[in-house]
Length: 215
Image (tube, rainbow, N blue to C red; front, side, top):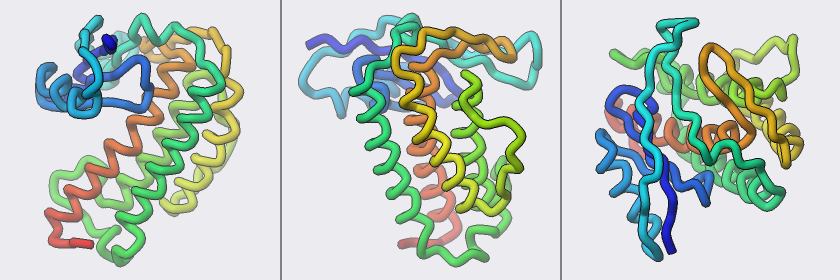
């Protein structure tokens, strides 16, 4: 079997390889080749073919905003089985995240971390929640006017409730939108949502290890 793959530098020195046939399956590395090699460890039953490669660039609308990939495959409408599978993956990733932080004292979660863009582990958790909400909002599927909770675990729950409710409505949705110079579709929203929490769970795990906290 040949697996079509897209590769992008989603952040500086942070390359992600996306398996188009499996929206939640990714590899990562500091180069395109490393990201593909990482993905290959999960795709052992076939050959990987990189069909698209994308380099992020600053948006003309906001130079501080990096525009990420819109692959040709992102135009393909979602089907029900993909959304059902995605919701199961999201449940699994949320359990993994909560297992990681549930036994960590609150003062450790709130502790300022030198060089951490989100300030603390609590800040990373808030970012996970807000980003998931933000992804849904790329296709106007997040309720407007909500006062988003500051408490990180409440924010995670509120954001996930929205995702569970909204993802099924994207089945068959063919809309293509452009916001801040970046193009979005239902498939792109799905794959980015699946990737983001797992990526930052690993981020939190590294930070806790650096802080000397082990499970």
